[in-house]
Length: 551
Image 1 (tube, helix red, strand yellow):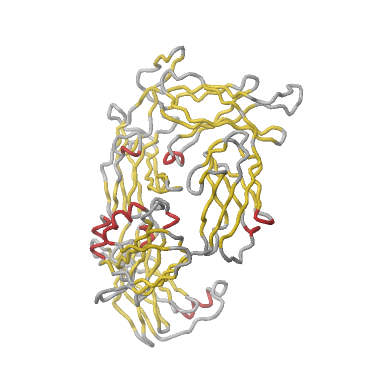
Image 2 (cartoon, rainbow, N blue to C red; image 1 turned 180 degrees about the horizontal axis):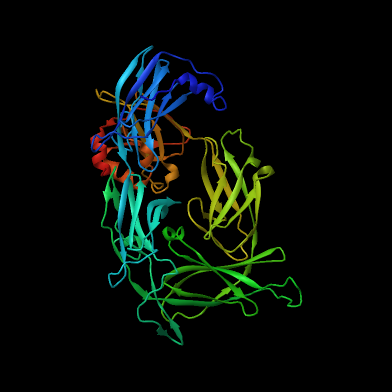
């Protein structure tokens, strides 16, 4: 049976742990077993972590019968975990991948034998991608995407993906429990073999294969949201791809500054970008072409009909020029014109509301564009800043670092409140930013009302139910200790509900969808700036919380 002494670990981790750890006479041994079948798990990495000051850990690998052993252990409190990369996880005292484990308590010289770790495999999903005739399609990208939020807007976050084999089959493995959208997206190299071309005015436009969400949806709003549980292997998620008539987007960039063709460095082209209009689609793709001298015309051939943001950008002699507009493109859409305007130097001021030790010049203000381009300005004396060469168009505000024990109280551009919304820079605008950070955050100290339950081990979720409900930055989580005590600090004012979820890791619940499911189980909390509250939330039993969350 393999074993490892914690005393040896202290030497191996000298570069990480500053001081040697105490050596004891205790031991912990046990077995890692498949949760579903009870079969032993071979070659799993088992990690035992001593919760001392500072913490230290040791690892061993299970043998052919799933056994492990640690020796030379001091008395104290430990966590115990086993993993196999891409296969699954086991945590002492936890019955699921999203459950909180339990501490293993070891007395001086105690030999704790027979410890069982329940190994829970991650999920898999599989299926086939077929064309309209039912034949397999090779090399199609299939991906799981997680629903998420950005500034309150729904977005899709890439998670895991694969491509189909020569039989049109795909399989995505090592999936954590949760909710996902499944999408198939043919590569541009895969051509539709149906009857083409189709006439469109004077042009010939092909039918194109289009990306689709499972089971057969163009838009994510019409797609099926899939829920995957611990260790599930789901199959039969087949796609039947279809084609539709493409559109060709043509246009011309206007307002280009005069150029001199005899100058070797004269302007050759203007960069033009096409992106989906919907925020939840923007994370998936953008497309770029060049508008070439002398007429600066451009073309996006074979694009699916829909609503897009189309932008142009030119850097010439150290100055930036830009254009941006939202347009619906369909069959027969005419050419568009993108008139360039010079970029602006956008000014502003940052102030604090409340005491702080952070100097104003430690902050940088950012603007993030549709195509993820980023402009910035460092805050200087008096809190003033300038973001140079800001192109007209759509942007989002951000700052770094996040204020220590503070929150973004207000952000105005002129008379517009742009704190958590996209902002639009008009050509020639002279509006200025006014940014206020408040350090008057609130603190909650709590003690769970367990009502006689054996354990007070719980995840704490503080979720906004007012106007900030869709903004994940206003969700706070904490972990109650063995006695049910917890602390949450740095809280922005607002209307909240607090949840004490028995044995559930609340990091997976920091979103409005989970909060909505749990709403009836929560307790109302109204928080004002600078509050210091003592709360005693009731422990929500594990099974009741799981039922509400649909897990």
